[in-house]
Image 1: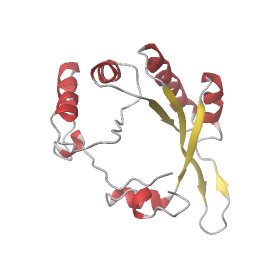
Image 2: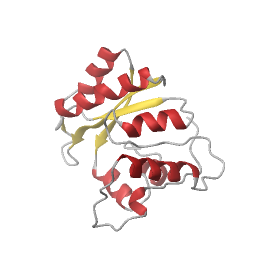
Image 3: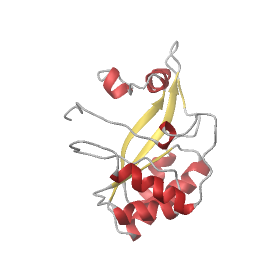
Image 4: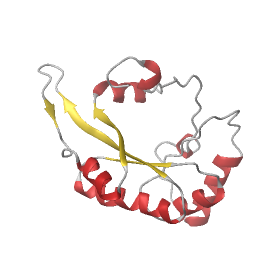
Length: 168
């Protein structure tokens, strides 16, 4: 896989006060999405990744109807409650229609840094079972690891800050 050399990030979270909740209704949400998509100077993009909350509402439909989407990916833990939402995402995109590349199993396992024992805190292989149910591929597993959290907290995703690490 070819490494990503340049990346940009934009979030509504950058535009509002950190401790103030964003309480927006549908039209306000859609206006913000429109601004993020069309008024941010993204430069020359090869990919634009839009991280959306789980669900099947206005945001997902509006994004899929207002920008050309080549593919969608669903990310979920293996926890039953998360998988119920994760099941809906690919079904929405199939109706729009947007091709679904597959599922990513997030926080798939915690590996003890001392003894290396793996614990499946959120359950094991739930996303894999869901992928089979939806006839999708599993694109990968993201472990629950302190290095991922620390790199994210500093604003330097682990895939860039430590690209050769197992976590990346």
